[in-house]
Image 1: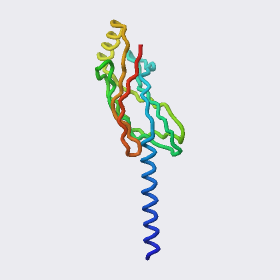
Image 2 (image 1 turned 135 degrees about the vertical axis):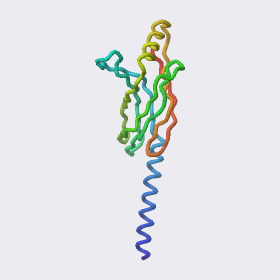
Image 3 (image 1 turned 45 degrees about the vertical axis):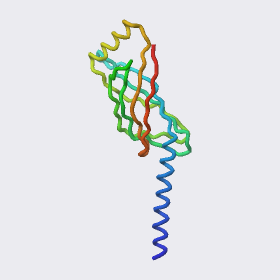
Image 4 (image 1 turned 120 degrees about the vertical axis):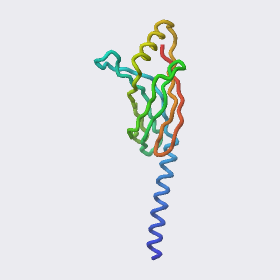
Length: 146
């Protein structure tokens, strides 16, 4: 009986240590908002992607469970980002993670016209969260385009 209790206690302790170490590793995950890219779509408006660079500096493989937030261009929210697809990042590795976003046609045209008219720098901000193994990482990063 005592042996069974020791085995169960050991298994619970091992599981707790595993999940604690995964949480600690997730805290070290680095997420960098790289900006927006486009690809041809055969339609008037191209496919638009927001790109994230996910860096895992630990010796443990990590996964990102979700990325959610808003894309803001020059102070105007243009699209929401929500991706619930799990992505794995190898130990001591990194990956570029593109997420397709959708911008209403009128909003996209107005943004392009404003950019052409003013010939100004465009600040693109991602404001949201990244969930890695239950650890939520708040993220607010801005990139500038010309």
